[in-house]
Length: 476
Image 1 (tube, rainbow, N blue to C red):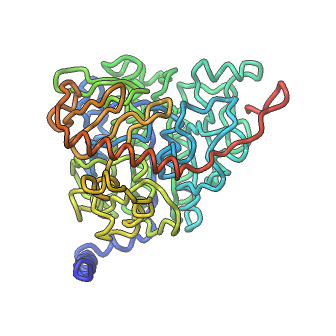
Image 2: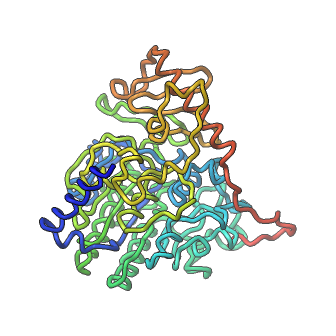
């Protein structure tokens, strides 16, 4: 261990010689763009031919494109809970379905969201876009670590808009105030980007954390007049191209304000949408499912000024919960001791210090050891066949109804129900040919058992308010 730390020190000294400006970024800005319902193949850099996404593709060309990246869940609210808390949604009590306008639950006030973590460490924070994580005051963005909020707390599909028919439609909110009612889907992508650019300009001389969860590409789709008919993929493709245009606007703003070199940008989707459309696009499944196309999504990390490597394609298994400790490490923020989360610090992977997610025992980054806060006591049945690193690096798929559905470890994916079914995702990413390997199936089944036991003992309370006792509740 002493030898390893010595090598790390030598590496750091060499970085100071080769790139003095890079290490000067002690508190890089963070921009996290979360797109709603974008499928794995629905960007040019992920194989789309029906749409043109030059600005997002440029992020991939100048950063790290993750090929095996998983949302926390195949549906909106649990996915966002996992991202913001660094935990499997099940750990924080938010694994089941979504929060509607009459929901009484949200992220518990005892949880430390990534926004709270960054704000406690001197960052200015904002959420601009779709929230969908509870609508009573304890669960709102400004109660969960964000200094500012602008956007929709809700979805715009009929099962949610019905709650607002008597009050004039779903409101666009600025903090606690209604900015406009009803919200117009066709203008949201532009409005959110306008707000994001204004926030960046106000805070260009101060470190900031900008969380930009777009309402698009969720139905009902909204496309401005400028982009209607612009793609070869219908209204969905038009909405993607409009989104790409506004990603370009935001990136240009970072450059115009002179902060491009001290900003990290992450682009990801909150869940999948649909399967591939040609013989080279083999993933199957849709949103809500735990087939690969339902939960494996596009994700790009960009930040040349903070040494995120350029033009790199990573096949490491990465998931949404990993951003919590990783972005904290990039910002020099230690995840508070005792805080148990499920994310791993992938900073060494992003910076080219490793091509895999390192073992926590290697201590290659500030929050490397965080996964070792999770309990590890496998018992005699599993102790000889499952290592702690294998368990830590496994991904546990949960369906839209909250149940554990499958486990991935390395190239292998094991479905648990209705019978154990094993796939080799390296040779068969389309999950079309079950394989027989009793040793591997037993190992992944053991991981599922250990995970169930961990969640049984380690699930924390969900935030909840008393049931509304009047016919008229505050739904905003």
